[in-house]
Image 1 (tube, rainbow, N blue to C red):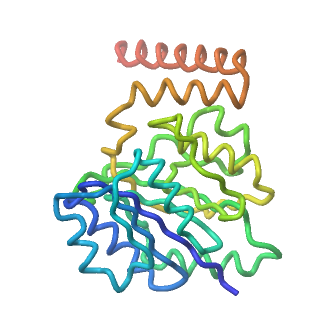
Image 2: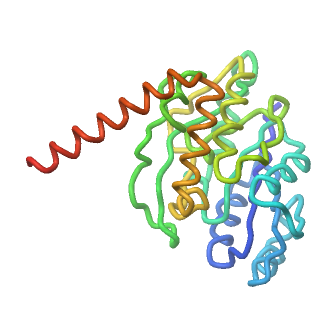
Image 3: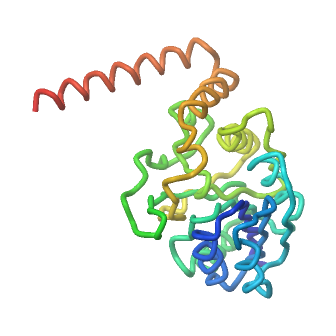
Length: 250
C-alpha cells in the first residue's frame, strides 16, 4: 500500500498567497489529504478556501494562540502515514511528487520515518529567487542540526506516529525544536535527493529574525550542550569575519 500524506497549511489573512499553495497541493491528485487551519481570517482567505472546498479534507477557521498552536491542530486532524507542513505561499516543487515518492518508498522493506530534500526560495509571486543557502546533508542525523536548520521545515516530511506537539513556549522556532525531536525518534531517514518545496522568503521567522535566533540558540543548548554550542557560534562568527574581510579586499 502506498502511504497517505497529510499536507497541512496554517494560515491567517493570506488572501494574496494561499491560492498558489492550494493549487500546488491539489495538483498532486494522489496519496494526499489536505488540511487547512485558519486563524480566523477577515481578508477573503476563507472565500478562497471555499472555492476549493471539494479538494480539502479538513478546514477550520478560528482564533488560535499562534502558528504553532495552529500546527498542533493540524497534527490532531491528520490521518495519513506522513505529515507535511506547507504555509501559505509555499508550494510543492513537482506536481508528481507525492506519486513519485510513494512509488519509491513503497518498494523499501519498511517506510522511512523521515523523508527530506532540498528547498528553493521564491518571492510572493512564486518566482524563483535562489536555492536555500543551507543545503540538506547527504545523510541527515541528529548532529546535523548542530549547524542550524539544515533542512527546511517545508522539505521535512515525517511519519505521523513519531511526531509530538509543537512546544508553544517557542514563538518563532518551535519548528526547529520539533524537527530535532523527530530526528531523535527516527530509525530510518530517507534523502529524496531532489527539491521538495518552494519556500516563500517572507515567512514569520524571517520577519522576526532576531527573536528567532535567540530561541534557536536556546534550543541548540538544550539538545547539544552549552559548551559545544558556544564553540560552534565562535566558529560561525570567525568564519563570517574572514568572509567579510575577504570581500573587502576583493
